[in-house]
Length: 263
Length: 299
Image (tube, rainbow over all chains, first blue to last red; front, side, top):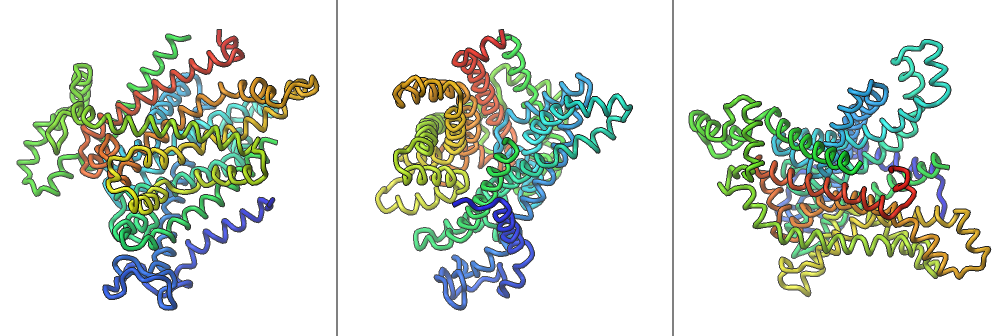
């Protein structure tokens, strides 16, 4: 049963590459071209995974949908990790008043549960990919900042940080050389956690109608599958399974990395 | 300590509300222009709407008016239905409350059960199935499970809208993941504790050890996890109500967000932040009550 974490990591990278880079090689069909006479087909030689309620090729929509969903989640993760880490580190190395203000701000953001905060942001950002990326990225800033702040405080307490301080290193030097280096494994693990959240919540919000209709996107595909649900559940299966496989890989890696770092 | 903690909770709620207030006003595109675009209002009509809502006032004035209203029980008026936000919330509170409480019940029971069985299951099979279910509850999107359940159940149940336990079970299953994982980890850790070895060497029954030395000490650590899960559950009600076409605060919030009806969004978010913060507060005190180590450390 035990699979090495390196293998799962490779599997995840391979899985991501399939969706991010390879769609044009794996299919020649358009993800948005409708075929009114070919609605709701089951898998066949012409349509590898069948067609949806508008006669669009599900295999092609799955691939390009993955490209959209994963790319969006990646960008949200980037926003959350960069701003969150910056806030966390600044908070940890600052004098008490700045630290207190930042902690109050972080707590206030955490007081509104994840998806609800995203909904507040979407109220004015509107719909579409850009709005979703921003809303989900901003939502995850506070948890990242909190974790990075705690971790930075722990690094600051170590003897070598004291030594570095005694030798007259500037705070910027200490952050760049020591703190960031010590935090890298944590940031990587937590980055994967945030990436998972971003996929789940991004698809959830797309499912709820915050993505432009018709876009190739796993969440949109699931929402559209509801249109034909009385006739066949088939179109809901491929995007659902794709999300599950992605999440399983991510969760497995995070669990193993956690065990590794905690002993 | 008690007073300080309550004051900080109030400050957190105030700051969260202020953040939502500021965000809803400084972000590009105010609600009236968004509405005007859809309803085809002329620019003078839009101006009139803005004046009516007080959006032409300086931010500080709007902010004072807003808090004056909140303290007087006036949480604003929906831009679409024209109803006071408090009434819209009150009308829809019951179904969401029922859904939230029953899902929480399912999640807590299932979380304990799966976490416990994954460690202490009598058969290998039981342990593996529990572990798999825990993995799945975390990896499977709730909107997927929900959609499939609606499809399957529709054959037997005529009107899904009046069912409570079906959506509650789906939501509860997904919310249980965090608790189940925590129970599993804590049980594993507790097994390695020296006092458990001592208890075993004293010849205590395995069942006594489990109850007194393993389960009891971890209860306090689980309370904050349960509250954290409740935050996830509040988000989950939005999706669940949408899938099962239930009425409730979640579906009101979703509609308000899609229509950019910001007074409604703001009111519901304020309510959720209050509920969530109060629960966090209660769990902090609960932990102190349950765990003498923390109680003594703080006093």
